[in-house]
Amino acid sequence: MARQPRRVADNFGAAGGRRRRSASACALFVLAWAGAQPAMAQTIEQEGDRIPGLPEPSIAVSFPREFGDPGGIRSALAGRGITYAINYIGEVLGNPTGGFAQEAFYDGRLEVALSVDLEKMIGWDGLTFFTNGYQIHGRSITATDLGALMPVSFIEAFASTRLFELWLEQKLLGDHLSLRFGQLSADSEFLISEGAGAFLNASWGWPAIAGINIPDGGPAYPLAAPAVRLSFNPTDNLGFLVGVFSGDPAGDCAADLPQECNPNGLDFPLNDPLLFIEAAIKYNQGEGALPGTLKLGGWKLYGSFEQTATGSAGLPIGLQPVPGVLAEHDHALYLVLDQMIYRLPGDDDPKGVAVFGRIIGAPSEGNMIELYWEAGLTLDGVWSARPHDLLGIGFAYTGVSAQIIDYNKEQGFPVIPSFEGMLEVSYAAQIMPGLTLQPDFQYFWNPGGHVGDPEDPTTAVPNAAVFGLRSTVNY
Image 1 (tube, rainbow, N blue to C red):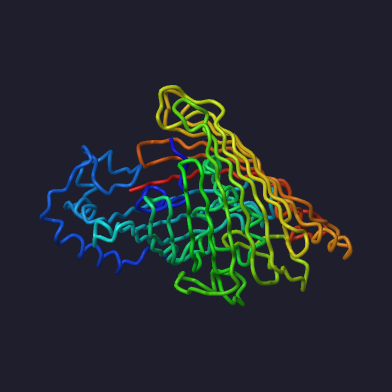
Image 2 (cartoon, rainbow, N blue to C red):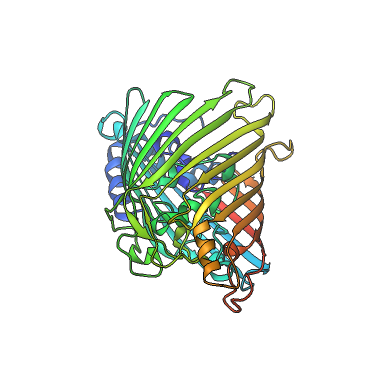
C-alpha cells in the first residue's frame, strides 16, 4: 500500500496538491450549487465503474455506488472540476510505563478538503483552488504524560475546529513550473521523506528541530501561514522548491499555546519572512530499477525571536530555553534520502523494501535543538497474502543544543539535558480500500531531552513506552 497520508489532500493527486476546524461549509455549498446546476444535465464521462472525483483510496468503492455518489452529486461536481474528500483518523494511545504520568487517551481528527480545477470550471488553463480544514478533538498524550520533543502522533493538537490551507496554484510551461500562493503549510511539500510516512509520530513529518527552533512551531500542522511557493521541475528527475512564509503563524502571541492566538486559523499574520529552499534528484526510475530520491535544502528566518517551551503543533515540551536569549536570523540545513533496496517483480507501482533517512543541523547559539537525524526501514506489500499492508521500523534522534546544556550546567541544575531518542514500530493493515487499522509501538529515551520530573526535579523523566491503535477512513 502507499505511504499513509498525513492529510487527505494527498489523495487528490494533481488536482489537490501533495503531501502532521472543517473547511468552510458556506464555500462548499456555494461551489456545489454553482457547479452542479449545469453539470446535472451532462453525460459524465465514467472512469470505468469508478465514481469520478473519488479520492484514492476510498471506502466508497466497497459499497453500492449511491454511498460514494449520493444522488449523482459527486460525479456531477467532478464534471465541473470540483472534487471533495473526507478523512477521519481516530486513535487510542497509552503509556503503561514511563513519562511523568501513565494514562490512556483517545484523540481524533476529521478533515474536509475541497479542490477546484478552474480550467474545467471557467476555462482558466492551469489554475487550481484548494482548501482544507480540521475538527480536532481529544487529549494529547505527549503534552499530558510525556512532555516529549517528538510528539507521539501527528494529529495531536489543541482541540479546535480550524481552517488549515487555502490557496491558488497556477501551472505554466507544460506543468514544469507552478506558483502557489495563499495560506500554506511548509510541511505539505518541504522536508518530506516518503518512507517516514509509514509512522504515527509527528517528527517523521515535521521534524522536532523545525517544530522547536522555528517560532511557535513554524508554518506546519495545525497552523499554516500566508506564503508563496515556486516549484520548478525541468525534468521528471530534477526539481526545485522555493517558499517564502510568514515566520510566525500565531502572530504576536501572549498566550501559553500558539493555537490559542489563532484558534480558528482565520488570522493571517504577516511578520518576519521564513525562506525555504529545496532541490530534489530522482534516480533509477526505470521499470524494474531500484528508485531513489535525494533532497538537499535549508531554511532561514529573517528576524529574531525568543524561544519558548513549545514544540511541534504548539504542544508544550519539558525542555526550557535559556532566558532572554534571542534567535537571530536563524537557519538550518538538511539532507533527505529515500532508497528502495528490494523491489517486488511485476509491479508498476514500486513496492518492496526501502530505507530512508534525514539529517538536519542548526547553529547551537540561539537554538534549543542543534541536531536531528532519523533512519528507518519500510516493507511495503511484501507478503503475498497482505499485498496492501505496510510495516515500518525507525529511530529518530533529537539533540539538545550546547547552549542549553552549558546553561543548565552553569546553573547547577541536578538534571542536565542531552537528547531524546525514539524508536517506532508500526504496521498499517488495509481492512478494505480506504480503511486501515494501525497498531503502533513507540519507545522514548529521555522524554523531553532528559529533563527534570515535574514531581521531583532532582530526577529525570523516566523512559517511556507508548502503545497505540489507529483507524483511518477515507471517503
